[in-house]
Amino acid sequence: MSAREVLIILAHAQMCERCRERLLNDPNAIFRGRAMTDEEKARLSELTSADFATAERLSEVSGYDIGELNRYHDHPVARLRHF
Ligand SMILES: [Zn+2]
Image (cartoon, rainbow, N blue to C red; front, side, top):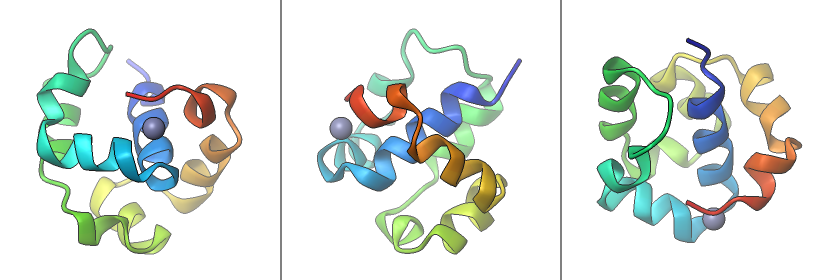
C-alpha cells in the first residue's frame, strides 16, 4: 500500500480551496473508490482548515514530510484532478 492517494489528496487540497472544503466537510465522499487504508482515511478525516494554513503544519499532522508533499504539488494528477 503506497501513500500515493493520500499525498495526491493532500497536495490538491492545499492548492484548491473548493476541494479542501469538500475534504473537510464530507471526507467519506472523497475517499470512496480510492486505495487508502482505514488508518489513512481516519487521519485525513481529522484534518481541520487550520491544518492547511502552512505546509509545516500539514506535514506535522499528516505525518508526511514537506519534501514529499511538495513533490506532489507538481504531480499532474494532484494538480488537475478535482475531488
Ligand atoms: Zn480541486
